[in-house]
Length: 149
Image (cartoon, rainbow, N blue to C red; front, side):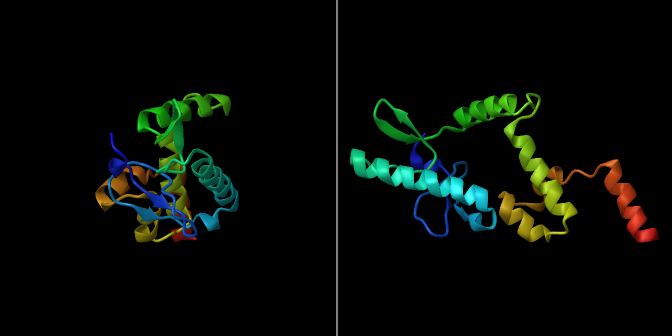
């Protein structure tokens, strides 16, 4: 899989792609999430330092060292690492993709416009987005409570 197949999510203040996936890139306002922005900033600086030290062009901020050659992280590797992280966090039954569902649900509950939510989560169609916008019984009860007063 070549680097052209990796989705680029670029920091607004830096040129390095961050993620992978489809072919189209998108901008994500990392500055709104200070801890994540700081983490990505440190990783971005580390990557720039590696480029200067090794003389290599490193295509993404999230990368791995393949015997001295830095390559983008393959989605399967990220999935395995996510699974390991979930185990260490005490939620071994979760998969990384569950958190995408949680983000969609939380954005919906917060009243964020669907068009904005779709941009943030990378959903291109409303049909796919709706599969993530899970409504639970508590949501239904809360909705009725708000409506009935």
